[in-house]
Structures are given as C-alpha cells and as structure tokens.
Length: 250
Image (cartoon, rainbow, N blue to C red; front, side, top):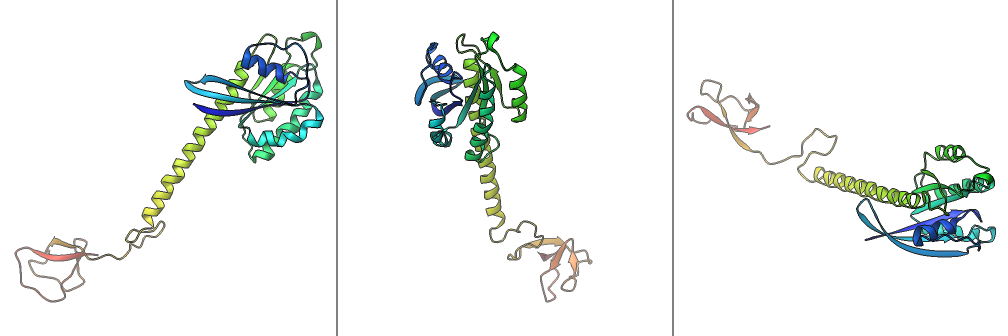
C-alpha cells in the first residue's frame, strides 16, 4: 500500500475542514472553528490500487500563511478550495497556485479546483462558468463544484488528485527506464572494438580468415586485389589449391 500526501488549501471560511471531514469521516460539521492545522488518514482504493491518504487541512487565515510553504514542499497533490458565495476566495487561489508551481518548480502539479458550498444557491456570487474559466487558464485543471453538506462531488475531487499522482509516478518510472536503456546502449557502443555513435570508421580488430572463390582461373591475384569483397592476405605466390584461396576481410 502506497502513502500519498494531500494538502487542502484555500482562504479562510470556504469549507476546507468540512470537505475534509466529510470525505474522511462522512460527517458534516455545521459550526465554524478556524483551523490551524489538522491531519487525517484514510485508506481507499483507486483503480484497483490500495492507497493510504495523509490529508493535511491547513489554515486559511492570514497569520498562518507563512506555514504554507512547508505544507507545499511536503505535499504530493493539492485540493484548492474556494466558496461560490465569496468571489474574493477564488482570487486568493490564483496566488496560492503560483506559489505551488514555484516551490515545486514544475508547471504540472497534481491538483483540483473546488468550488464549495454550491448548495447555497441564494448566496452565490460565482457561477460554474467562473470556475470553468479558471480551470482553462490553469491548463485544464480538473474542476468540481461541491457541497460538503450533501457530500456532492466530495469523494470525486479527492480521488481525482490521487489518480493524478499515480499517473505522474508511472510517467516518471517510464522516463527513468528509458534513460537507463539509453545509458546501457551508449555504454555498449562506447566499448572497445565497437563503432562509436556517429562514426562510420570501425575500430581496428584482428583479421578474420575466410575462403572466397578464386575468380582468376585458379591463379592467385596479386596482393591487394579484391575478390568478392575480400583482399588477398598472402604477400607471396602460393601453390594452387583446388578452386579457392585464403583471403582476409577488409
């Protein structure tokens, strides 16, 4: 069973803890208590693979943002949460994503964009199209509108992040195998007696004796004359032996 580290990030009051607890414990928290840092574990199966998730629910209030860099360094996948009832919460995610890409030094990091509290239709400030637009600008990062109250799309969002992490691991393994195969191929071509890559001149090796038909009526040709792609090795005239002569490959 593999361990996967997920980090839930977003502004304060968007429902990060409600989403996490609903996913892990299938319980809805109806009271708001600002989080400093809470961690949870959950075992799930993704595409037939057993996974142990370590989920870090982070603080959204400003005085704890200094701890965010450490969370990002240790995390493998990220759930970026905003509230559809708070337009500013989506704007804050733009800076958080840029921080993730900078710390991870990659433009492709496993993450999902989550618009929470979609059940509060009368309080909406953001439409689904707003989330879709941000997703497109983020190279089509998976986007979900969720309801922690009704558990709508909660599990799908977390599973999606895990699936992205697994896919990235497989790609990295394939790249490592390709590099290893290329390294082995180069080590063979660089060995003594083997032509180097891009060089058509073969390495010197000891002559190989072959027998080629004597096309000169049974008489040996002068040294250096080619017979059937071979050069006569004898420097002296030899006695006639049946219908062939001993030659050396050029």
